[in-house]
Amino acid sequence: MRILIIGGTGLISTAITRLLVERGDDVTLYNRGRREARFPAGPKTIVGDRRDFPVFESQMHEAGMFDCVIDMICFEPEEARSLIRAFAGRIGHLIFCSTVDVYTKPAARYPIREDEPRRPDPAFSYAFQKAGCEELLLSANDEGRFPVTIIRPAATYGEGGNPVHTLGWSTTYLDRIRKGRPIIVHGDGNTLWSWCHVDDVAPAFANASGADASVYRGAFGRSYHVTGEEWMTWNRYYQGMAEAMGAPEPVLVHIPTDLLAKALPQQAHWCLVNFQFNNIYDNAAARADLGFRYTVPWLDGARRTIRWLDQSGAIEDCDSDPLVERVIQAWERFGAGMIEDLADLREVASRGRKVQDA
Image (cartoon, rainbow, N blue to C red):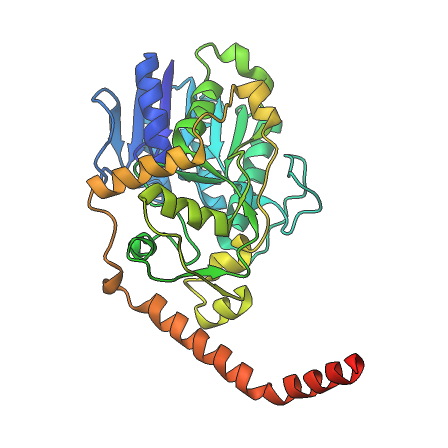
C-alpha cells in the first residue's frame, strides 16, 4: 500500500512508521525535517510546513494518490479544512489521530465509550480544537469526500517520549524521586488514570490502514479508543515510577488542584482541565475492529522508558528547576498558618468532646 504519514517522527508516529516499513508498505512522511528519525531507512520524506496551507495542498497534489493518509499532527480546525481541500476524492482512506480528551468532563459514566458526549471545555484548547477537527472530518466522510477513521489515544508513553506528570512533561520529577525529594501531586492523588505503551497504540493505526483495506471498511466513519487497561491512581503512578527506577517510596505532597491552577496557571493548566477527572475508557471497539491488544504491563513499560531516558541523558537535574521546591515551601507555610489560625476552633471542639464524654 502507498501510505502517507503527516508527522512520522513523533512518539506514536515513529512506531507506526516502523510497523508499516516492516510490513512492506510504500511509506512517505510529511514533516518539517527537524527531528532525527528513530527507524530504519526506507520512508521518503516530503519537507514542508502543513500550516502553510497553499504550499501544503500544492505539495500533496504533486505527491500523487495515496491508499491511506495518517494525520498525526492535525490540531486545529483550519488544518482539518486544509486536509479536506488537499485530499478530497484523491485518497482511499484518512486516519485521524485525535484524543480521548474530546469528551465532556466529568463523564456521566465510566468506562467512557465512543458514543459519550463530546463537548470539551473551550478553556481546554487542545481538546476543544481536536473536537472541532473531528466534526469537520466526520462530515467529510458523510459527504463522500474520503472515508475517515478516528483513533483516540489517551496518555501514551514509551521510549522516545517523556512520561507526563502533574506539572507537565519535564523529567525533573524523576530526578526528585531518585533523590528522595518530595514531589507535587494535584488534589488527593486518587483520580483514576490509565497509561498505554506506544507499542500497543501504534498497531491499531497500522491495522486500520489495512494490508487489505477492504477488511477494515467497517472502520470507516467510526471512532476508536486505544488506551491503557490498568486503571490506577496518580498516587500509584508515582509509586510505580519509583519502583521502576529502584528508588525509595516517593514523598507525595498533595495540593488542591484549583489552588495549583491559580498559583501556576500555565504549569497546572492540564491539572485543572484534565488530570483532576477520571480518565478510563472502553477499548472493546478497537479490540474487535482494529486488533488492539494491551500487551505491555505498565510497570514493564515504565522500566523500559526510564532505561531509555537514562541512556539518552534525558532525565534533568532537579536542582536546575527550583519551582517545585518553592511551591512545596509555600504550601507548607500556608498549611502551618491555617493550623495556627484555627487553633481556637480546635480548642473549642476539644472542650465540647470532653463535656460529651463526662
